[in-house]
Length: 235
Image (cartoon, rainbow, N blue to C red; front, side, top):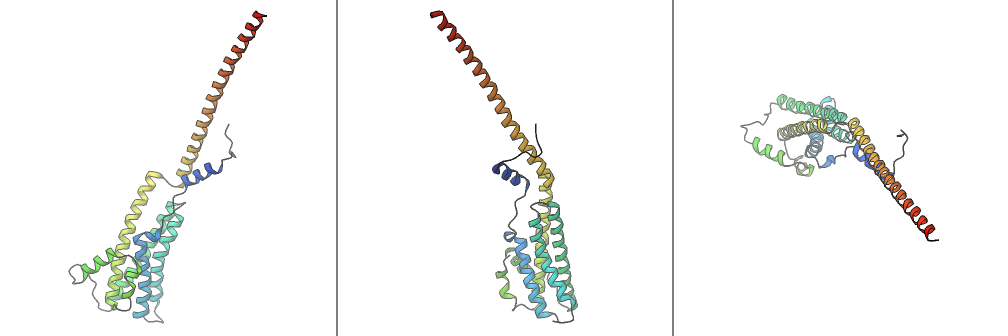
């Protein structure tokens, strides 16, 4: 009989937790997260250098959008241990924030009559290659005081492009993982069934052992009875 309050030893409990919870990812090692760190610090430097210190709401909007892009990745992956759905939602929030940031940089270039570096521009390919290959803050920060607004805005736009592309690929991977492995409810059910299956196998093994022992007892009892009769015949 199976009881809902059945006790599990610590090893069994730990195994069930491992089966249910997804492993938390080290987001600091993810390239798209590293690029959002660059974007946040770059945006802070950009708004400090090129936008009015007072009276312009764009400053707060850009800095908050850049921060939201970074922080929602962290929160999403932490929450993803128990809820893939929530992780997907927060990754989408991060993408939306960075799209808002991208729009602000594009507006800045347009309103200041500065070019958006695109295919055909003399510096476009070098910028694209640099942003593709470099993810760490220390690889960009030395330029924050040297680039002009055109250079910094176009670099930020390239980073926004790469981050969005990478996060989109990550979302596709998450969705595929969900299809194959399910969410926490499915993993809880699978873990529970797995635990019961292990329990049943252990009980079946004990039952077989009991049957064997009973058979051995019966055989030994017959042997004892035989020896008793043999002893009686000699007396």
